Length: 321
Ligand SMILES: C[S@@+](CC[C@H](N)C(=O)[O-])C[C@H]1O[C@@H](n2cnc3c(N)ncnc32)[C@H](O)[C@@H]1O
Image (cartoon, rainbow, N blue to C red; front, side, top):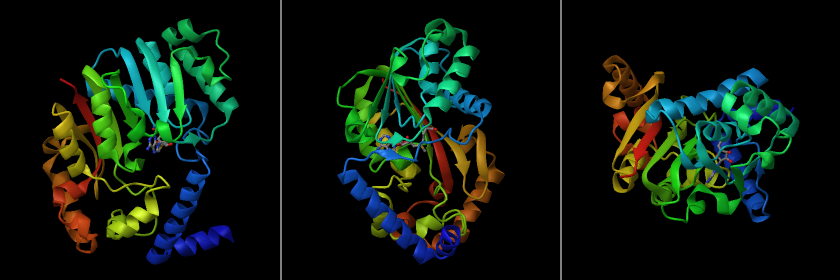
């Protein structure tokens, strides 16, 4: 019954908007009561141990690959780590002094499953085995050097109050959920030490809000004010696109590169590349796709170029000089 109702709602654009309005309202109420537990960031629940390990290692290896760093060191902040602290462990294994795991919400998790993942990860990495071979993996607090922060004061917009305190600030699949990513970036840039590195993968897609039954950019058709009321408290995608990142990074971390991870109407761009280096046929395919659907976009998005609207994900690589 519930599934049938959901399917009826999701096939109708206006009903889907109403559903997200209501859902956001309840998320806001939860926020008032101080509840921070959520399913967002619960990434490992349905994965096998092997695919969890692959996921964790891929996330870490991407930071390595796209930063061009052979080794990370110093103090790290991982923003929005979600349910698992495996990526943080790999930073420690690489030689980092400490990793602060900063999350606005507490992603629900199964402690026993995570203990198994940590044991398997430790067994695969000699440095981790040396450091944590004797640790009781049932307790996240047992890993020296890792610290978890949760709640409103651990939101990306609020947490970074100490200037020049981190050598590396990273995130994956987080900025699109942050209500004001531009403000968060300003705070994070100030919190980076000189020569600090800033690595963030951002997914501009709608995370299934409309794309299950409508075209992949259908969420751009919702008027700005309504969209904000459907998403701002529930952490759904914020529709902040590449033009805004270009602007705020130009002001705060001018030494940056924006790699494209995905184009609308095309798919993933792997390896991620600067826009100009992507095959012209693919760029033109994405632009043609945007042209075919942009007539009904919200006024606030209609001023963007076809190129910018076609970018469905980026990987930010920035250095503080
Ligand atoms: C889609 S999950 C990504 C989890 C993990 N980074 C990964 O790649 O598997 C998004 C994460 O961002 C967190 N998040 C959402 N809004 C945030 C904010 N304003 N500040 C910090 N973290 C936030 C969520 O709680 C969640 O853990």
